[in-house]
Length: 226
Image (cartoon, rainbow, N blue to C red; front, side, top):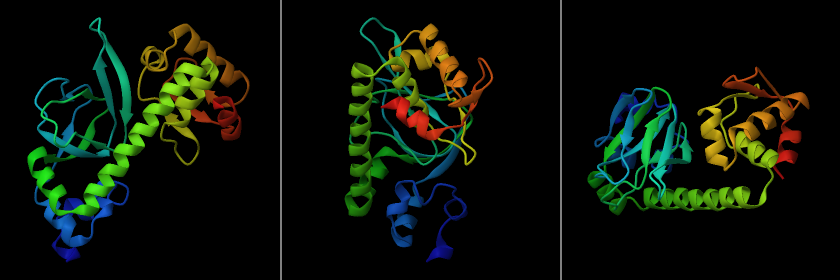
């Protein structure tokens, strides 16, 4: 049955770590019949908060920023999604967040109604989605704890540890320092000062104000996050 899978599935970079990894070839074939690939340009919105919720998707490459509106009308970053992550809310008629592409982002998109039917027929996929939902809830609770109890240094260290790192420790910051500050409940001055302190202490290596850095001492960064 492997040869019957569409080429986009055979070549998929995240097949093993996306939701699809929970499926056998026959089940994956059924799901793939619904899917289509779409590259969303940097800065484009995938879903708008409060609008119809028509799709679910796996992120193949790229990154998305999730934002929600505060009571005074400001946009607050509430999450970041990367390769292998899933976006969408099955069985919800409206989108709870606005999702914006932080880079040109390759999505494998499924119509929500069709995805819901596959969930009904594929208990493995339903379980995998439940596990991811529970993981997201744990991460949300952890973020609340970090914001409520941790120092500024610990918040930034925790944030850096949550981002994808290359094998050489390289991190490309997906959002600007002002957005990092908003995400962590800090001022931009505090975030800049903590970046400087981490760099001065040899924990990270980065150019001042740059979006790329390298984690030099992972253990020290983990200690800083405690």
